[in-house]
Image 1 (cartoon, rainbow, N blue to C red):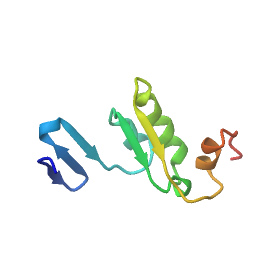
Image 2 (image 1 turned 90 degrees about the horizontal axis):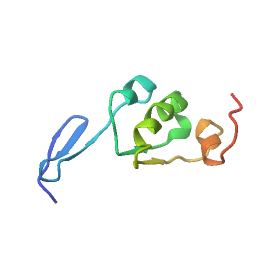
Image 3 (image 1 turned 135 degrees about the vertical axis):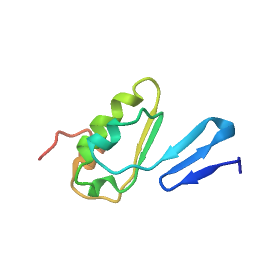
Image 4 (image 1 turned 45 degrees about the vertical axis):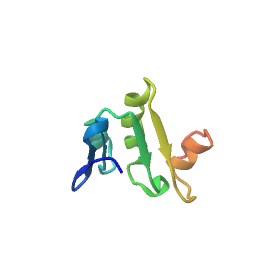
Length: 88
């Protein structure tokens, strides 16, 4: 493992100039950062999935990666997986 430090919601790899952060759902929380990758777990059950996704995607347009994971449920997540229009 590379050298790292951690504080609550932040894991920093000094030698690689890289870090991982956890933040809550919602467009305001997501909009605070510019990310090169986003991993969203159990997104089908998020109350603010659409707002979070909408805030994250513009920061990834220069070559970042979005990964959404979830068990199935009717939701915004299902709509983006199947490229469907929102039913809400």
